[in-house]
Amino acid sequence: MDRKVRIVMIVLVAAAAFTGIWFGAQWWLEHKISKVLGKELAGLDTSCYVTDIGKVRVDLAHRSVSLRGVSIRTQHNQRIHRNGPVPVIDFYVERIAASGVSYSKGDDGQRRVKVHELDVISPTMQFEGIPGNSGKDKSADSVARKGKTNGVILDVGTLTISNGNLRAALWRDKEKSSYAVVGLDLSVSGIYLGGGGPDRFVSPEMTADDADAMLRETVENAGVSGVAMSLSSLDYVFKNGAMKMEADELSFDTRQETFAVGRLAMLPQYDREQYTLLVGDHTDWMRVVAEDVEGNGARFPFVAGEEMFLVDNVGVGKVTIEGYKNRNQLQTEKVKPTLYESVWAIPVGIDIQTITVDNIDVVYEEVSKGSATPGVLGFSDMRARVTGLTNRPKSPDQYYTIYSEGYIFGRALMKATLTMPAAEGNDHFTVNAWMGQMPATVASPATEPIANVKIVSGMMRYAQMSMEGNSREGRSVVNMVYDDLRISILDRKKPGHERELLTALANDVVLRHSNPVDGCERVGRGEARRDVHKAYWNFIWKIAFSGVIDILV
Image 1 (tube, rainbow, N blue to C red):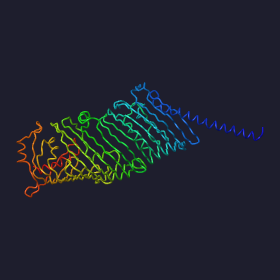
Image 2: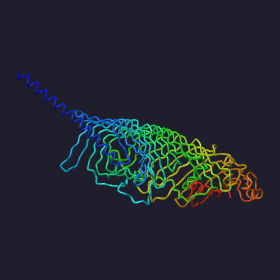
Image 3: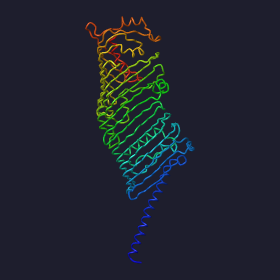
Image 4: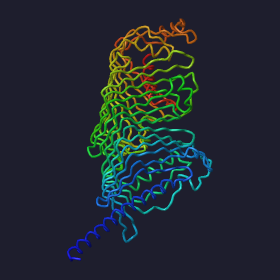
């Protein structure tokens, strides 16, 4: 055989062998990956869960792996396991693609997996947990089971999730919380998982507390350099279905330092009377909706080394608040925090330089004990500005300020400035308020049902109030100028009927009809103790009203 022919044949054979080895290696890797992943995923509990991978493709030239049709599901006939009920999982992802994959092992035995790009296309998941049992001993299958760290460092250049739809239900003791995410698009860059987190597994005892612990411990051993996310809607239902939080058109970008929410709402799922009766730990019905929320200069926790949520400016287009309480129904003895105590309790450190709200409407209705008609207190066309809001102050005497102005009862212009303590241990606040001219009769819809007092006539020229206090008590100084104030005392048992004797005594003996009188202006001074079972705003009202009463009687 000619020498050239032999060389050509050798080259062809070598090429064929190399090609066979190359594609054979790819086939072997595809088979191995499919087998290993199927085994590992099912390893949660092979008798309860079934996994499937439709197709695996490996490209050694581009160091890429592609998985199609990946699913994990609870076997329908195994939802009641020998150790008790198991969570229901229904997970499917259309495609997972990883490119630029490399694996290395250092001299110290530390293993590292690097991925240049990881794309997850159209994942859908439904997860239904089961009620936790605090009295049950955790078994070896428990979600709280910890193993030694797997020692693997995961380095991902960019993770992209497109068109994700997720639903989950978790339990904390006997309370169920549900989550739903629709239209999730996520891009995360510079992902680092240090391999120091615990091994945790889905199990029959997975609860909301377990999920929180898993998230915290994962974050402690992880880092990212940038995150961009958008979603169509996010729903969170809690208090066993009694309350729902919605976020529509939510997005944020840590690289651009921006975030936005088209609509953010807290919505009771029962009507007013049902909610009060069915939700035992919180008898106040409240509906809150915020629209057109935008923030800039935002630095997020756990991203690029940040430990707090830092924001330069937040703008809110409109806020609507509706509140209702019926004091004829059983009231729980739940201690309600002050406004600043609620800020202290936020689990993440925050520092927001400025928050502005363009329009606020508030309607609060309360049915007094023994009454059937609610008193109504309303604020409309209000604007607000908050500066220096933080729960991680640099000094113990640091305060943040809340300024608002708008209309009370739809008639009188009101302005108020509140200073609140930012540091725990500093328990002192101040409120300065001013109200403009209004007919006193416009307040009657609030005073009649609540105090059985009808305002017959009167004109308030202005009122100025200065208040200070702490979480236990407060004091006020009130300057209020008014003319020709007259009232009618109503019979609680006969709505609309006047108690003539008490009315005559009030108008002729007790009540000061005008201030000033004969050129002498009376200044009111009052004190009030806080009822910790009532809202903080009830405390502010009591402080102010104590000074008003000192002028009127």
